[in-house]
Amino acid sequence: MKTTIALQGLHFHAFHGYYPEERKMGNDFVVNIELTVKSFDSADDNIDDTINYEEVYNICQKQMNNTQKLLETVVLNICNEIKSTFSGIAQGIVTLEKLGPQLGGRADKAIVTMEF
Image 1: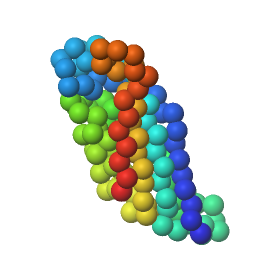
Image 2: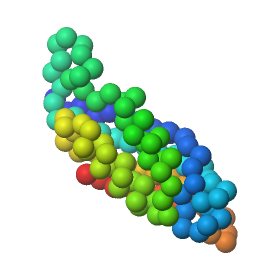
Image 3: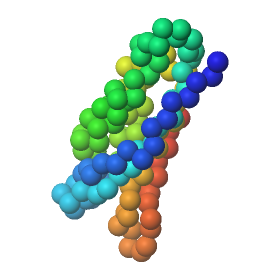
Image 4: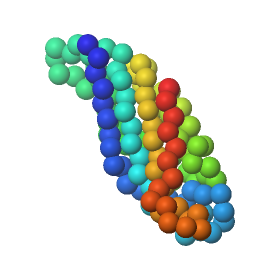
């Protein structure tokens, strides 16, 4: 049975950005994650038979605290840590939104998405 676990709207204030001002001032970010579990057939209601989304949140929080110049690097690090932590994942999608990026004009967000 296909089972998908999603965390949406994980909000962080972090210091990612190419320019020194971005890394000094910080910005608001939103992370969305969708994970497909290889199989779920737990008759005993055991969390070890699925993906503990509190652990997924902690991975995101750790990587958001690890300042990077590129949003792509942040997303790649989240994907890699999730894959190495949970063997029961068949596929996943990680999206990082940078709210109100400073681009010289009005922009609601910059978005990077990676699938694995």
